[in-house]
Length: 534
Image 1 (cartoon, one colour):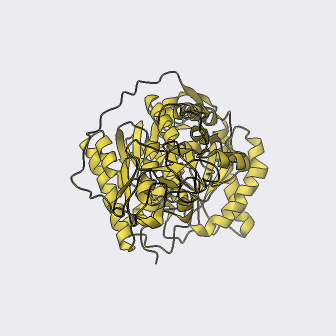
Image 2 (tube, helix red, strand yellow):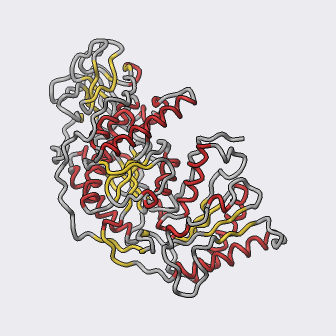
Image 3 (cartoon, helix red, strand yellow):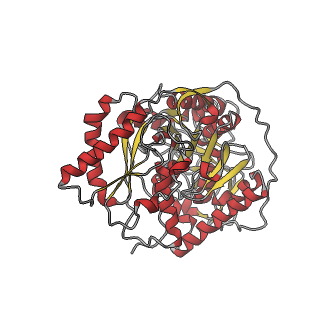
């Protein structure tokens, strides 16, 4: 799949591997019954775009292969030319998490990529921001309305005085009270909120708004020493010590009325804005990029166009010394053998297995399994089950060895990870995954979609990649890159990968805004909280 495909003929199908006994229909609108493929196969029924056609007779019980992986067994006789979909497939069971290959995959030759830079905001801890934002952290949902009101006034009244600040973001969430705060799994949402506040795009400025009576007290959210992680040295410019936690508590007796609360938030925000406004972009190597890759609204083209192009770009980033995170446990679980074989060390392989096992147990407690992942839209787009979806999802990670693993809510820097390909364990839901990648420290996000979604984040620029030309055409002012040109024969995977890489440098530098930024399409932060709610 790494060479430029020939121009598509009508009818046109995409076969991922020579060993596959199915291919997906690439033509817009699908193909009618009677269509003859290049190999002589005649369609026995109409097959929608993105859906699979049997390339050979598949008697009941036959293994159905796509990506040269068994994605199911035929539950009925499927003659060549039949439509192969989720209702005629029996999904394989999950792979066991023992006796897996460890660090056995051949190491690809990834020569160092030198000379690529972007203009970013350097932070004292060595991280680099792609945006210069004031983030206002909340300890509990109760304060969100007040903070939202204050943020509106900050944008109108204060930001015009500080032209070097890109914006202000209220870090709202649904956590903080009414929860079992001492339960073991409560560590996940707590460290997630903490580490979101430390994201490089917030310039090491941490401001907290608290109600006062909530379970997640500011000192518990930001224990002593937290801010030293992003302020390794005391300030030399005479400002207040940025290692001291700045908290506005709405229940403090000094606040008489709503306006008093708003005034206090604006007054404290201005201190942070003043410091942020002194920052300037400067040339930084591409190695300072921390990119999160994710897919949502996936279809059968995701694994054929957009995700392979992202995977090629992932290798470019790794060659340039950058950090790339891929995630979504249920969307890699069926390829765990692929991951452990690519682990740089046995320790990394063990960490991958640990995260899969933890999530298996989590799903089991809810009396469900990984099959609950696949959505109606995924199936309408031609993905039959989670096995097929996982094979198309993993290719976003490229070919480099996996050098690190994060548990949900952990921060790359805190875990000593700097550079390389990292597996950051998250649920697969778009907003939860994005939230956890923000907490991990990403400063740029790449999101592929086949069905289409207006997903965006206020905290980090999101580059949207369409899997199909039809989607890119219809959503021309929402999609930043059209990977559907690969299926159309108009571009190769390599060409789209390089296009994405160069776009990343422009977006990271502030020279380009993504469509999500232009329209200010920002989804809410959604915390992963596996602990009980009281």
